[in-house]
Length: 343
Ligand SMILES: [Fe+2]
Image 1 (cartoon, protein in one colour):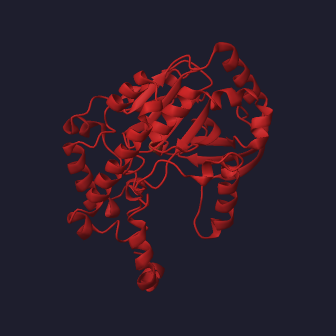
Image 2 (cartoon, rainbow, N blue to C red):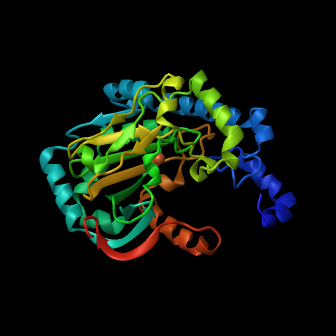
């Protein structure tokens, strides 16, 4: 615990305790979550088990809407790939309108890779009319909500991945990891082909399931990550070595080298990574993200999903993060007006 935190510990303890029933995941920022003693008594595993039980309940309530084939594949693999997702002419319009669009962008640097995001806010939606047809697609809406386990609007961005732009250690996202201790949704509609040399998304099929082997691994990790040398594991996104997968009864990872107009939706409790790109080609995608407090008993009632509010959340989040930047650093720097494909 840091010096300042120690001083204020008596005041913060109720806050830390309340965070146990939220998605808070950092073993370094919350001394209860990070406590090896509490985790030896089963705290981390209890949070994992309860979050997964609640997720299963909410998913059951959302299952009826999902395309039956998507549901079978998701339940089995934790990831669904759908090629030729949009009709060809609609996809061509969407790609062109996104290529022509420019607005305030944000960039983050991780290792040698730059990630750029443009919010799909009201301005973007007016400039990209083809987006509405994608956004209203019933299969998209049902699948992303089922995977997120909430009837919520995901956050939506135009995202560009620019690999090999810095002399730096590799992008930390190329290590296999789970994003969180609870199920969460990420989705990509790829606007360009993603060949192997571009560093495609990679997922360990079946690793979204909370098996006895996974529970044992989670328990073991929860005893050591806080004081380990992996900063991202300590912050609650546990890393795993490829050679550990077989011991968890898991297969070799699957690489999603896919053509443009492929949709991939994944539960990021499952182990995933980017692969190292051997070329510097920019990858452009529609990217969506959906997570909420995993302990919530109900699937809906989210004011942030209301029309008029949902599409303004990203701007609000960035604005708040900028205001709080003196207290907690955030990696998303404003870089001025840019298009997704700009250098
Ligand atoms: Fe991740």
